[in-house]
Length: 155
Image 1: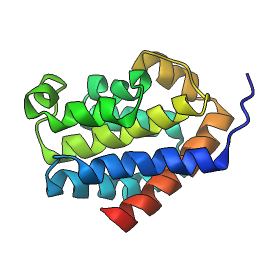
Image 2: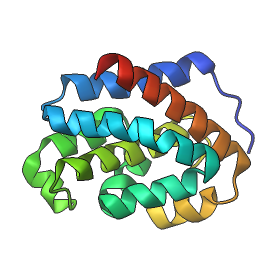
Image 3: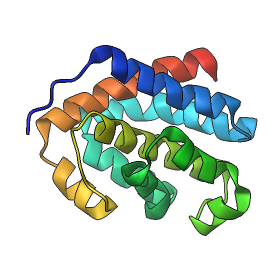
Image 4: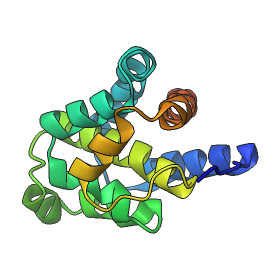
């Protein structure tokens, strides 16, 4: 299925994620961790691909937390869970770095789903489907660039 994307909507959706993070109850160290992920992982998105980056995010946080991006209807659905410390612990998030990886991975998956690039509900299916998907890799890199730009500007 070929999906024509609307550039304005991608930037708007990415900005909504950043605005939700800014206005959230997440502590400053978690926000800094997310910003660091946007800076660090952009080169991995380009060189190794989105399947690798999503796998890395899941390994360094939790698969369940990253998977939230596949089922979320809006950014509040996954960021809201991360705001609730007890709920976040149920998803395996204990350290500030865990949150940063989880938010980054779930954001990328959410944005790819929103663009109609992927339609998976399980993380394992998404990783398998993304591993050779040229369009998904290109779009993930582009959304990663926007996440980085907005995170550097606002966080």
